[in-house]
Every structure is written in structure tokens, then in C-alpha cells.
Image (tube, rainbow, N blue to C red; front, side, top):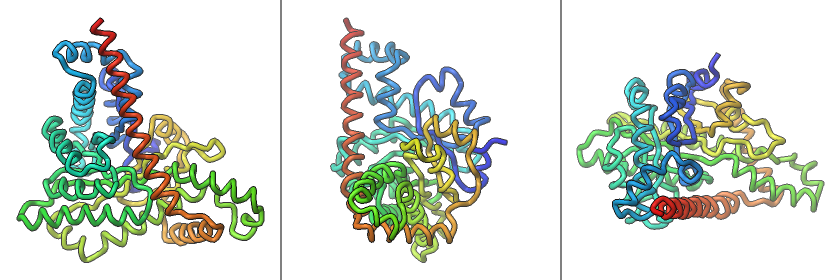
Amino acid sequence: MNLLVELNKAGVSPWLDNLKREMFADGSLAKLIAEGGVRGQTSNPSIFENAIAKSDIYDDEILALAKKGMEAEPIVWELMIADVRSACDEFKGLFEESKGKDGFVSLELNPTLAHETEASLKQARELVAKVNRPNLMIKVPATLEGLPVVEALIAEGVSVNVTLLFSIDRYAKVIDAWMKGLENRAAQGLSLEGISSVASFFISRVDTEADKRLEKAYAADPSLKEKYGDLRGRLAVANAQLAYELFLNEIKSERFQKLAALGASVQRPLWASTSTKNPAYKDTIYVDELIAADCVNTMPDNTVAAFSDHGTVKETITPEAIAEAHKVIDAFAAEGQDLADVTDNVLMTDGVEKFAVAYTKLLQAVEAKRAKLLG
């Protein structure tokens, strides 16, 4: 039994959170699509840094572009666009077979522009034109400055992956921006069919930060665990389950039903950062515990392998689980913790910074390679 195929039958599309050129050359991506149950692919600056900086497969192209007088940054984008275009082509059959539900490949905007609306929108339009594939998703960070980018791109008919989501409040704003984009498009008399969007909720990082705070609180006052329960390892799943509750409420709303009548598809919640960081937790926890209809789970290679081997497929985002999630979130507050500070302040800020750092490292690595190859 292929557990990823079973996961898809249960309502969750498994996507691969990795992209490197070797996957096309050795046929491994094609095999994952044909046999492994993988139904989409995501990338980010950290993934491309690992792919490009730590491999010599890109060297000939880097040299050729450098000889044309190109600097490191435009070279980086040429390489990423080429890889994303190739990945889109690998997924073309699945994209068509699923009638545009799956088979998407995500390309992230320059993360150093995360707080610059107009510059991000300009780059997004350029990338859509350069990649020129119907199954491209542009990844836009869920910063306040990113929300108008989401709205504008959806209105223009571009499929969007809204990334770096941690808080329910910000998720509500993302849903609003997505619906505004659809409403603006409908007002122009344009079709809403074929426009896809996912909202990427980062999972494991919530537990990493919350656990750190809980360890400190329990060390100072052990009675907290007795009063409210040990909440370590429970916040990330609870937070995501409440995000799914919001998703259900929004797609049932009169506002979305009007859009659905015009051909709009739902914006699916995507569970990202689903590899387990704490070895004390089951290595498939962030897949097992987040199974329900109309979801996506993007997994790195190790989580794909782990779930394929010993994952558990059953609906786990149930009304009972959501009720329990509310209790966990309430208990976290009762223990003196501030979830909004965890999600909105620390994790969102760190997320943007980490991707910007990875992007800068990628530029530096390509510049070093460029100089070396030119001699």
C-alpha cells in the first residue's frame, strides 16, 4: 500500500518540499509523481541554496551566464527559473489530469522584498512571464505588505502560495486578500476558473518556540503542568487545527459561496515545515495529526520517506480534535504564555529573516563560483 496515495484519498495532497536539478536528470522526480504519490512541489531560498551552492551540476550554466557578463543575482534567478520550469513540465500531466487542482510548483519571491509591496508585485509579474507555465504558483510572504500582492495577483489570474503563515489572525487577513482578489476579478467580468491558491501554515516551528517557553515556565513553577497539563509538543497541531476551523467557516460563508458559484476554487490550507525537529516526537506527527479534506502537506524528503514507511492515514482534524485544540490554546494562555507573541512577533520575524539570510548566502555562493569558474 502506498501511504501517500492513501493520504491523498483522505483529502490531503502530498507535495514535495525540495527542488534540485538532479531530480530531473536521474528521473527521481518523475518516479515520485508516477509511483510515489507526490502531487506538487514547493521551493524556498534555503532549498535553492542547498541545491545550487552544494552541487557542481549548475557550474556549466553559471560559467556560460557569467561569460555573458551576468552578475550573481541575475544568474541565481536564471537557474531557479530554469529548475522551476523543468519541474512544472514534470508535473504537467498530473496538473491536467487533476483539472488544475494539483501538479503545481511554487517559486518564492525575493525574500529581501518581503516588506515592499510594489517591488514584490513587479517581480511576481516578471516571474510569471519568464516561467510561462500554467502550473506555476508564486510564493508571497504573509507579511502585511505581502497581502496587497496576493490580492493583485489573484485578480490578475495568477495562482498564489501565501507562505510564512503562523497566526490565525494573519490567516484571516490572507483569506480576505484572496477573496478580494477574486471579487476584483469577477467585477471585471473575468473568469474565476483555473485560479488556485494555498495558504501555507508553518507547523513545527510553533512547537519549537512554544516548547522553549514552556520548559522555562515549568522549571520555574512545576505546578503549571499539574493544573493545566503538559502542553509541550501540542501547540503546533492545535494552532493548525484552529486554522482549519477558520478555513471551514470561511468557505461556508455567503461571501465565498457567491465566488464559488462563479467558478472559484477554495484556497486550501497547506501544512509546511512538517519535518519533526524534536526527536522525542514521532517523525510523522505533523502529517498524521493534520488529515482532513481540502488540505496540502508539503514534506521534505525525510518526512516523505518516514510517512511512506509508517505514517497513519485517518481523518484527524475532526470536530472533537478542534474542540480539544481550543482547550490546548486556552491552557497555554492560562499558563501565562502569549501565543500571539510566538506567532506574530517571533516566528514571523524570524521566518522572513531566515529566508533573507539564505538568499544572501545563495548570492554569495554563486558569486564565489562565478569568480572561480571565470578564473
